[in-house]
Amino acid sequence: MWSVLLMGLAGILIGGGISFRQQRKPLWTQVAFYVLAAMSLVAAYLLALPAN
Image 1 (cartoon, rainbow, N blue to C red):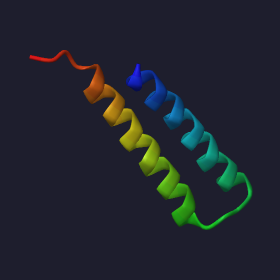
Image 2 (image 1 turned 135 degrees about the horizontal axis):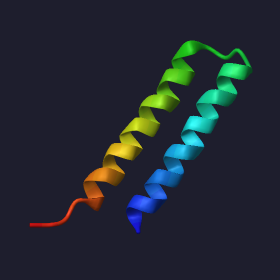
Image 3 (image 1 turned 90 degrees about the vertical axis):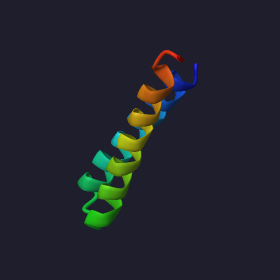
Image 4 (image 1 turned 180 degrees about the vertical axis):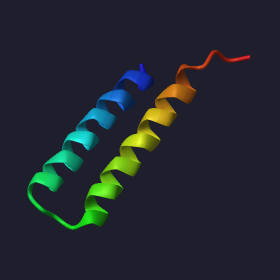
């Protein structure tokens, strides 16, 4: 359940990064959104792993 929500959050963050690129905002804001999206995808992957 949480992994699905985190993947959705990653999609929203990537959309925000693309939007900031189109608006010619500072590069650090775009990078921050992409890094947060990547962290969200990694967390979703780790939550989807089977527990041992």
